[in-house]
Image 1 (cartoon, rainbow, N blue to C red):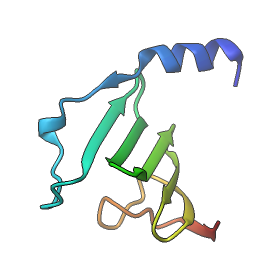
Image 2: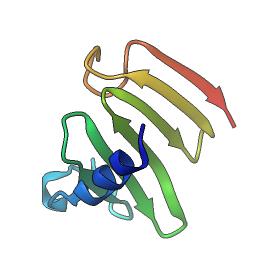
Image 3: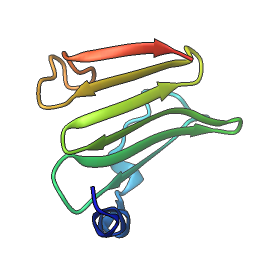
Length: 95
């Protein structure tokens, strides 16, 4: 990927209205979603007072995510999701 592409993608990120994101009854959690200028380019964050609980970065159908409480990194390919949240073709690594 060329530096110009990275700069374009970074500048294309726009925050999505937080009211569109369900918090599943978690009151101390704040969810943030940035969507980029091309399909399958997103950044999701779940924040609380202590910092980042969870994040997922997706670019061109490939994703990486991390959870603080499990300390697991997960990679995968989106577009092949069984339930829309966990990629079928994924790999997990503990940190």
